[in-house]
Length: 187
Picture (cartoon, rainbow, N blue to C red):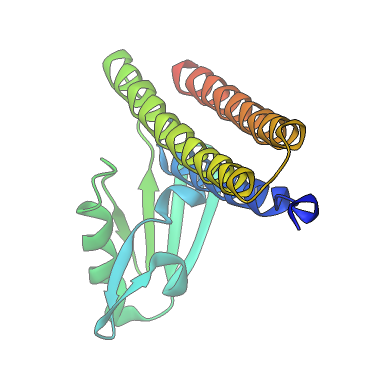
């Protein structure tokens, strides 16, 4: 029975990839001085009585490197969208032009860039912790199989598989962090 044990490494990889995808989303929301439509993704607008993502009440465009525009489809929501952007903590001052809300992205100063690199580091650490939690789950499965009679050689094999997968994902997180920090510090 114990010889039939096979760890579902695809499931572990899928869960670790989920942590990586979450990290990319968090990195995209960091304002780096360059306009990006994804920086508005976390913003919710109180539309029709429920919180709605900003991209479901208007079209988000990046017409130039330092400008994001939101073309609100319903005129009655323009004020609510503007308020949601103001209160989002992005530090962007929206400018109205009919149903189009323009968001000029200001240049970042040195101090703000350093703060953003620290925030990026925190996001990366959260991703590493999530990956290590998946690793722990995988190791627990191997230990349980060992208690059910898995041979020591098989145990070592599966533990090595889990550790290799973990190392690969942690390395990917570190690379993503390095890239993001370089992007933030670029003037």
